[in-house]
Length: 179
Image (cartoon, rainbow, N blue to C red; front, side):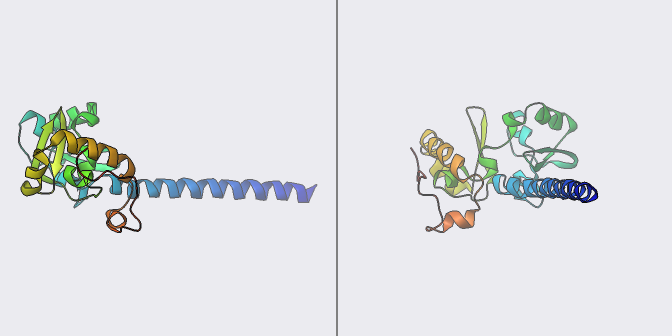
């Protein structure tokens, strides 16, 4: 009977350690996955610009580190407590599409940096582009590029860009360009 109690205790302890280890790995892994799904530069999404200001002020506005909120594992800065609170009330409304990566790049099956000054609100959604030159190309067919990017984002959102750049490792079911 003593051996059986020992074996049950050992099994229970092993199970508890395993569950704790798995929970620890899961909590550690979440930020890494979020970092791939959200374009984070110097610790912040949107390069530290206020996502709400695009909608309320109509221009890129740097956020303040006194007003921070987290969404999908990424930190956002805001110009005011009011903007932070608006974001917290409806983050999907204000967060940039494709995790703040370039919308044109996403349509091409890649994850390029999004420049907060190369932006556009379309159908009440915030889109960024790599730069103004790329944005001019994206503006030529916004609906087509958005359809292509929407399709690709579901496939590439958790894949590192280095793998997307490698033809052998890139998913084969991507749409390239406008749809």
